[in-house]
Length: 199
Image (cartoon, rainbow, N blue to C red; front, side, top):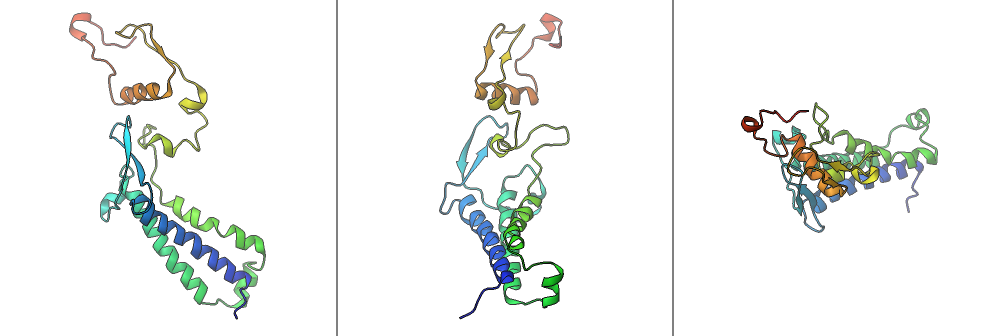
């Protein structure tokens, strides 16, 4: 019977957490055993839950391609499995353990953060260079302190076909905000009105 030491526990924890990353990407995101992933339309107005197969070419370096998320999870999980097996089977010298202070239980528990750090390192940026959100809203809700739902934004229209109407429904506000980012919300007859729509 082998007794597990503190470094063995650390290696086992790293292997387990990165193996979980691999399973989630290979099963959940690809839709084999779980409810897949939320995929928005190109404008971010609507979307649906569907399977996302990984991309295996240069497409994964484009941060606006959702197939890259599955690819990154599979790669991180695969590399982590090999790293965990390597650490579990190869024993570094005792001097290294003492030098890195690996004898404490705090080190073992905090080492699970390594898998999360490695995963977050490869996530694409959710905003472009101009600060416009190009990813789906649910990815940002956990970090957002000023989301439309939390703040309670109201939209009012002036000088157009919706003049005097205001909306406070978050879904409607997000729809108009997306359309405003992509161009005009309403068509403006510049020739007749001799007005460019900017006041």
